[in-house]
Length: 226
Image 1 (spheres, rainbow, N blue to C red):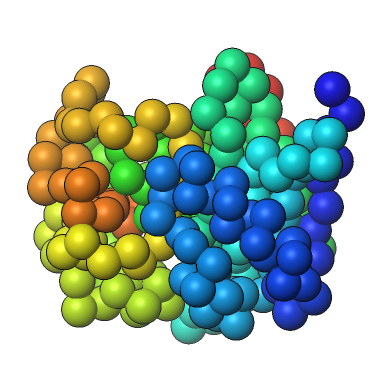
Image 2 (image 1 turned 180 degrees about the vertical axis):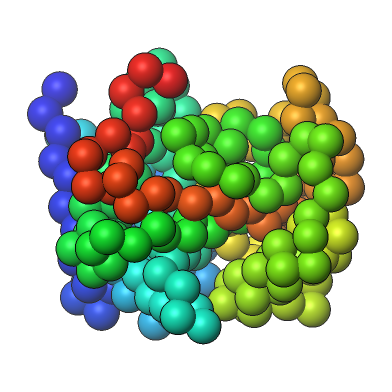
């Protein structure tokens, strides 16, 4: 089926288009209704949207910016349609972000930050380096500081436990990237990282990793062999 990938400024998203995204996001179980998305449209700079036969099947609102001089891709909210080709949809979104990062930050390593609700969200970080949090790794003071910086950008600084990177939303929809089954509890080898994440209360985990300059330059991100 024909698929269209487009990226535009968030400010150019019309109300009808936003309503389409909201319908998809609500059906996906994210809790992102039209009112929430209207506010997010004002918070973020870019929107990558995927449609199949005119229907939204994936989107992300994000920004490319420097935090303290460090180049960053900050993915505010997003979702992909669950199914056999969900990984392809995710890769299309990430490929758009990496292409724009290469143009904005040539010859520089770029930090990628996002909130995920389950271990499946770690697919966003396939191919990246020094992912935090990760198993058998105690975050350094600087890494905990990065978690706080990202939480502040996401507007959830007061809800973050920087020791675990868990955002405790208390039932309030605060945003995340929805990939895979959103009803999964902590499981698999990454289960310890999500022990404090209560999906029923819209909790999430702040995760970041590094896209290296050479990977961006040679187009090896996102990796095709995952």
